[in-house]
Structures are given as C-alpha cells and as structure tokens.
Length: 252
Image 1 (cartoon, rainbow, N blue to C red):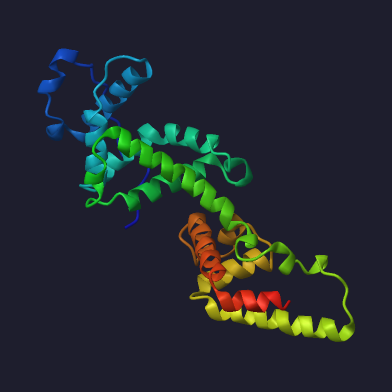
Image 2 (spheres, helix red, strand yellow; image 1 turned 90 degrees about the vertical axis):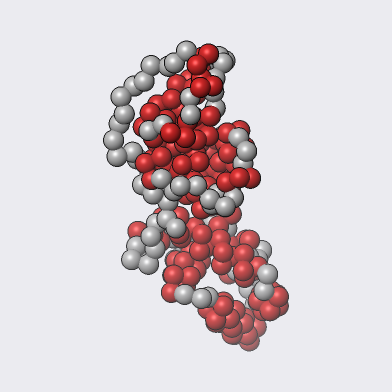
C-alpha cells in the first residue's frame, strides 16, 4: 500500500490549550483530527520547553494514521514531525556521502515507517516514545541503504571489475579475460528478474549513472527515485550471496 500524500488538505484553527488539570477528562479518541493535530503541536511545544505535557494527542494521531489508515491524520503527522525527521537525517554520518537532499530522505523515512508499522503491528508500540524511536530508526536506515546501494563493491571487490586498473596481459590472456567478462555479465543478466532491474544494473555499472539520473532517464519504469535505490540494493544483496557468480568473478 502506498503511503498517502504528505501534505494536509486543509488547515485547522488554532486551539487554546485547556487547563492542565482538565487533561485527564478529555477523550482523545473522539476528537476531530484537525483539533487533535493542533493539540499535538501544543503538547510538543510544552515538551520542548521542558514543561508538563500530555503525549496522548500525538499517540492518537499516530494511531489514526497507522491503524485506521486515515490520510488526513497521516498528512498532519508528516507536517508535524518532518522537521524532526530531517534533523535525524542530517545528523546521520552517512548523509554527507549520499548525494541526495534531506527532503528526499524525509519522504523515504516516512514511507518506510508507514509500510512497516501496519495496523497489526501498532500494538507493539505502546507509547509515543516507542513510535518516535522506530521512526528515527527508519530515518537512519533509508540514508544508510541509499549509500550502500551506490556501491558495486557490495557485490564484489572493486578491483575485480575495474578493468582500467588490471595489469596488462598477453594477447591470448586478454582474449580469455574478455570471454570470462562476457560470461560474467551474461550470468548477471540471467539472474535479473525484470526490465527495471536490468535498467538499474546497466545504468549503474555500465553507464555510471546515479539513481536519480536513472530515474530521470527511465521514469516510465519507476514510480520514484526511491524505487531505483530499492531495486539496486535488492539486486546487490541477492547477487552478493550467489556463489557461482563469485566463482566466475575470481576467474576474471
């Protein structure tokens, strides 16, 4: 299921914060989603100021977004927490090597979170802290996955495929190496499952294109640049476990 749009369709009027002593009497499950989102913002501001706060509003917003799959609740959730997620992404050590904007990874983190926390899994997160901790984990993982997916070295050492760095060989040896390399690429092609995978591998390791460049050139095959990253990561992971491929590579 694709995550809903990341921006709210309307804005709600600001609410006045009720007296703290009355908080326990409020049934958050009956609140309008716009009012709930506004209270979420109020309580978050209290938290950041070190004041007494109530996390029930934020937790209920998460519940409606993830359990009820309420798109408006999800939009408010994204709006409220996107700056926090962006901060986590920028502090991730892998971010500087990613070549992507923090905004790109914010969308990826929320998408990963949406897909992972299904209605059936929501009960595993008993409070707001647990939900935010997992969201932070998603933010870090999409950055790290993207950086890993850029490296062919995950499948095999770079010196095995960097032909310019190979020592010069005799003509008969060079001919044999060309045959071995052809077998290597033929075998890789036989292990690819779709046109999308072939385009990603060809674009990445023959044309030397970045995932964003691949998406821009072949956008009819992919829904987003994040799909290119996912395909690349999955292909590298699958091929890295292929013992026959490693045997062929050792002969090159």
